[in-house]
Image 1: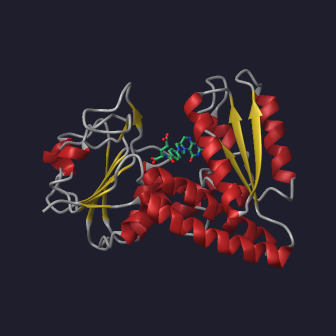
Image 2: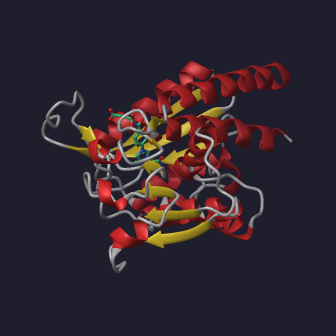
Length: 290
Ligand SMILES: Nc1nc(=O)c2c([nH]1)NC[C@@H]1CN(c3ccc(C(=O)N[C@@H](CCC(=O)O)C(=O)O)cc3)C=[N+]21
């Protein structure tokens, strides 16, 4: 027995088709398209690729993209002014400030300036609080996309042991909240966790978001577990026998024979993040339109 591969590209294209239908209905009703503003500060190559992917995805589903770029030495005041301008712009349904920001700017502070109803990343204090309290709101894109993948894979979440490795505000914490909402027994493990391997091996659903290439080995995985790999690590060249130089936080070749289902990298969680951003932008536009 070996794992079923969870095809994130396929599920993402289903989500995008749903969003495209919803966008068309929105245009019909309101005579304008939902809009997504992205903000990229500086010229980090990976960030530029991600933002480009988000803008391209908007165009494909009929969302109007507003692509804002600031130089790497932009001042706090410049960025504040841009966010305030976008908050006030009725054509802009959602605002995404690509992280990380250059060192002289505070990503948490800047993200928090985004109007609650335009927070399509779900990363403001308000959105995080609404999630923690179980109130409706915009959810962070990557964790929301992971839930969608788990549902697609038919994973039983209620009563399951779920282990999330990684405790970031961007992913680990909101992921744990969403799993809790689905009645999983949730453990958040991290760099100080004692005997991480033994904790991971308890998991019926194992989610890795540590940012270390292939750290999760085959013997860490409970036979039949559902494994979600959130890591995106770029190696200098593709590993032996692989086409892509991107690898996840899970050693795929070791995990594949043990797991029940597993996401690949690339083509797993990454495409879902973008699809969920589009879904959040449509949701934000609908909420604003009343
Ligand atoms: N405010 C903010 N919101 C974000 O959502 C955000 C961010 N900042 N900063 C960086 C991370 C990273 N991120 C990805 C999105 C798509 C892929 C993706 O589509 N990956 C493809 C491969 C892409 C490639 O080839 O490089 C895949 O996994 O198949 C990856 C990573 C969003 N992020």
